[in-house]
Length: 363
Image 1 (cartoon, helix red, strand yellow):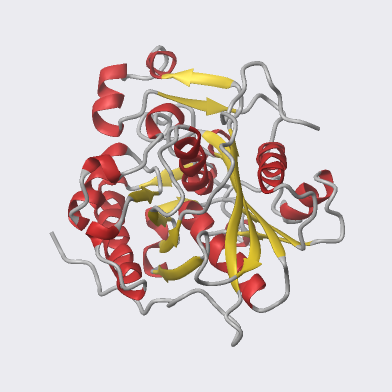
Image 2: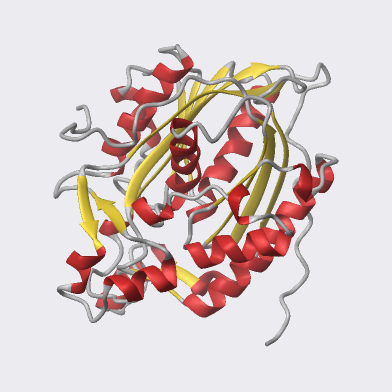
């Protein structure tokens, strides 16, 4: 098997002003739609089984939006809960990390901001596929460090049921829909919750490894009519597995070096929830025991940019995350993109469950 090219230069520590201003995590929440799609349901129409899916992915169920619901609906619900967690109803900027915006134009963030009563706040989308939340975290931290914003609402939200072919046996079993959100405030770089160090990277030469080929200017300016496959999400699974493990492990190591930490210093490792095999392989590569790897992939599947904040929210609700714990985040996604972040966990109120039985997203 050929080796991967060297990891590209890192984006080092999070941006800070000369006065040492930093972004501090002060609110967290998640939300997934009520509709549960079990492995048994998928097995009735695909050539698969619950055992086959669990063995290869670790996933037991996932959540799908109802017809007519969109990414913004989930983002609004997660965002409202995160604002409540932070004890605020105002922010200066709203950032939405997503691969499935409501429309190609305009961005989804402004409508989310408006529905949350945040009209006038800066609002924009970040597109880095499953690395979107980490890229968005760096972007939000930069706004605060530069003095552009005092508070930022960052939401990772994806509706993969809208872009994955339901008859695609390989990908239909992996992905689900959901949203997770955090609120960041200006603070001191040494206080708990400060997002202290980042590593970000990309490799566009491998863009076809994870792709929706149709719908953009490349396809729209050609004469060819897109095929069914081109209209849906595609992923070369074996190659993605190899790149994901290598890139996430390397990025995590770089971030630990920047933070002057070792793997044994990490209390909780929170990777993008791609599938259980990838999570365990990255943890093994880093020498981290399985009990330090935070995962909720069994109950929600791969939710793209929502996966890390959803995993954090669920872990906090279970009492796994405690103030002072060292937390390492890492992700890998289409682009190709990858990124990691280190922080010391702050004192936060426990969020409610990501899904309350019978509760629909607020309008």
